[in-house]
Length: 68
Image (cartoon, rainbow, N blue to C red; front, top):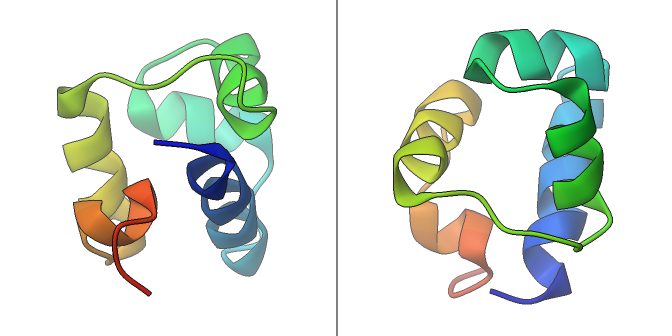
């Protein structure tokens, strides 16, 4: 994954009109983790990617920047 993941995560979150705190609750992680992901400073585990993909209704490939 590269910064495309960070960009897509932030874009999807904003499209859903939710803040980092709400997303963190949905994913059962700390708010600081969402911030780190959106800044591209760390990457989620596969299990969190699966949860995010289901939550946003997109594929893991889309989130990871593999497909458009």
